Image (cartoon, rainbow, N blue to C red; front, side, top):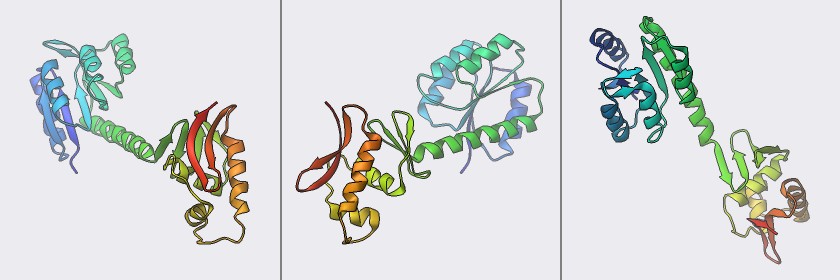
Length: 229
């Protein structure tokens, strides 16, 4: 799949033409804008993988553009500019820029920085895809870890499985047989009391004060619901 790049650069034609040509050689899909207004329109109409932008435009500054962009999309951003101003550079990082290059620079360096940013973004997106939330609980389904209000909870493998299965099905009642089939992969286990023991230990680890998460439906089974007394 082609990397979709939005180039928002003021009318410095020779530099812009060179950058466009060199990046196009990488088989990127490139869209261009020369004003803040045009950049905002394109960013609102289409999903881009990365933005390469200048610090000065006919209709405003790069700081103004980045501030407005932050309201409509979250896009990795590289600043390319002739402006050697440390304060402006610091402000751009504060506004969420990922990198800052001052002319003159080697186009190979720009390409390397694009690749580095996309690797970081890809990792973040992968991490996000692996995270499931249920109220105060945060499940990492790859690492098989759980955080409660941001603090990691030390669960056994079976405790993790039980909590995850009921938490992603809130208020659905799970009988002991259901849990045995889902967690132990068995239709029948010899002693269902071991499920009760796992539930008790699980509650001891995740209950905070009067807040409970694993509830009992007497005579039927267990279910997930956050209750604060």
